[in-house]
Image (cartoon, rainbow, N blue to C red; front, side):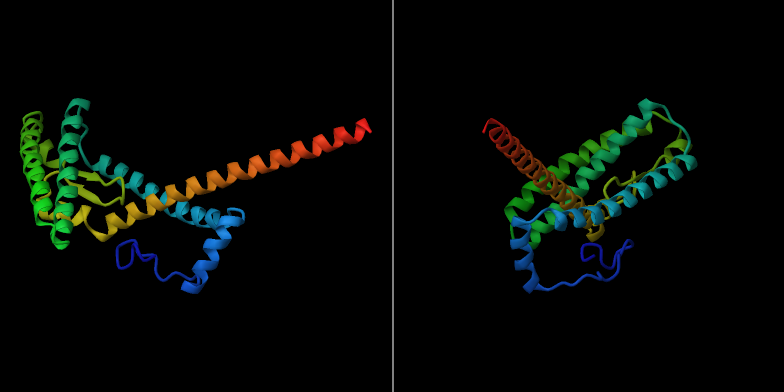
Length: 215
């Protein structure tokens, strides 16, 4: 809820109780008890991500219907431009964060990487532009972000790229997806531990029964 507050996918205020005094109780209980806490949270996040991924696929389909079909070779060239856009956007977001933290030297190093990526992008755009008619070139300019389902332009400028990849919506979805993976690992580990304990108890019962039969 906090990660996506005041964004286009704002979930509103969480209806559950948020109390720091309860957090310690949860941390103690989650170590010793079954995985009901994590399972409930995992189901909640999983439902949200499934809905987001569904929106992404719908957006992709809608986009495909409005754009001309192009060959796989040309599509690969367009994808290369998008990949470089993503690289530049993430680097610029990192530059801004380093600058805000006062790490000027490291920020400059990352900025050098940005310049190299910009050169590669210009070259990739030229290759792509020369591979198709001008009319088609203008149409094949959008893609859908796999993380947050927002539209990205093939020719987005640096400011737009940095705003997207360093923005609260995109970073919020990264946080949610990472948390979901963490919960999946916790639930799987606890499930495995639970299965091992059940197997151990069953083996102990069987051993006891065999011992009774021998008497």
